[in-house]
Picture 1 (tube, rainbow, N blue to C red):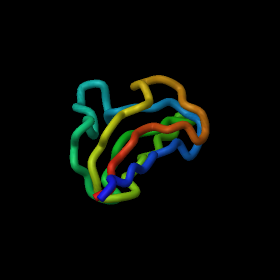
Picture 2 (tube, rainbow, N blue to C red):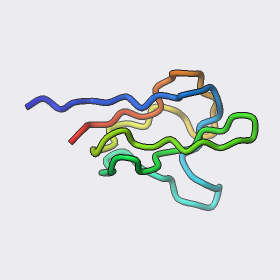
Picture 3 (tube, helix red, strand yellow):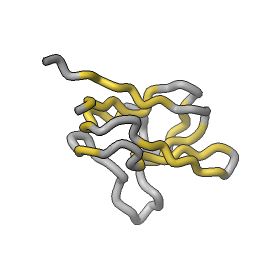
Picture 4 (cartoon, rainbow, N blue to C red):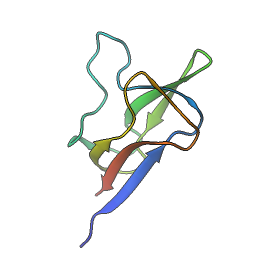
Length: 83
């Protein structure tokens, strides 16, 4: 059976963050298994942080966006493999 890849995209333009604070570990790393609705990263827009959650149960294949860098609306943030 072929793996189903799912792109997690930015719902709005903003700044991509992999962790909740500078001292904290990242929410996820490539290779991590995650549950649906688990927080994957944060997106900051006009000082408001939005939690980006997993749309599926699966595994993080690749983290595409760069930490603390701007992303545009609909940019791919992460690629996941659905279980």
